[in-house]
Image (cartoon, rainbow, N blue to C red; front, side, top):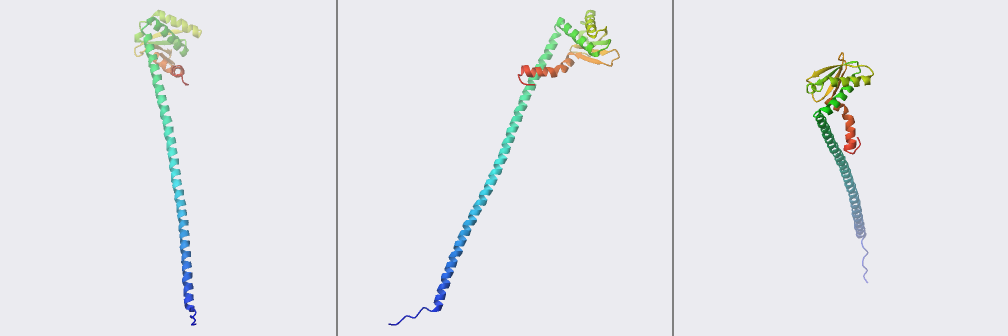
Length: 216
């Protein structure tokens, strides 16, 4: 039998090199694949984090905007309520002013009102000598009987005699009167318009509480 010669050493070396090369190549490929998968997962994780951050910020901004819109809505609603309340109060004051003017259409009622206003004004001045001013429209009512009644009632309240000097002032309109001290140092305006202005804070509370049924 003729024996085949053994494989040459060079061929074994070559095969090993090739085999080793293939193994190394597979390792390189596997490493690359693992690296790629790792990078992909990292990229996906980063992207998800970014997405969540963006969504979170958007939701926070939306929440803030929603809160602002709600707050704005509440403020506007409150403004509307306050505006409606002020309009209602103004209408009540207009009605009161109209009723005051109607009093002047009834001489007997207005005479009583004028007497009360005069006594109050004289008492506010607090002096024994007072000039009592009335408007030109009230000239016919300002007779001796009216002045005597005012003098008596003012004197009883003060506990002393009060000297009253009547002065008709054409500039004084709308009803009521003004009391001025003897030397003009004290002036108490008790005209209808001024008296209503002084009473408005108290009247306002009554209107809000009784008419609008809310807290003042």
